[in-house]
Image (cartoon, rainbow, N blue to C red; front, side, top):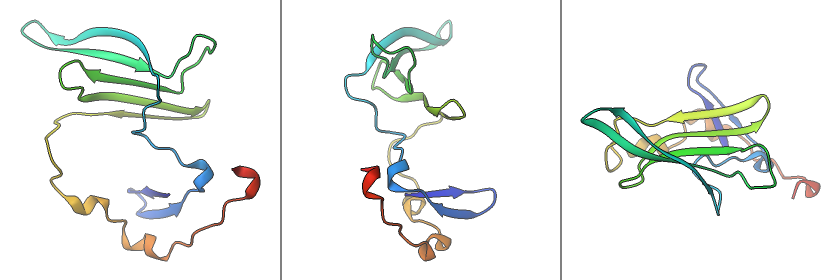
Length: 121
């Protein structure tokens, strides 16, 4: 998996044992809440979901989606106490306006794959 730092224009590889799919919502997610964002006459009903289970105290994933059509509003992932990724979605449009965003930059072409350790599986 590639990690791209847009500010530094740097590309590095992340070990496959560290891969983290930001859009892979946990199966059997827990409904947390439903609320309205916006104001009178201009609002959207959203639902909040997490990977929290009754026996656990802390979530590692929380997602907020519109009730109608299930559009993403915000997703937060916590890998550990020092690494959290929060993504907010806005100005959504159907389709992909620039499919080239899925092509890794040329700096990634020289990245070398690393073999996973057998103990990491």
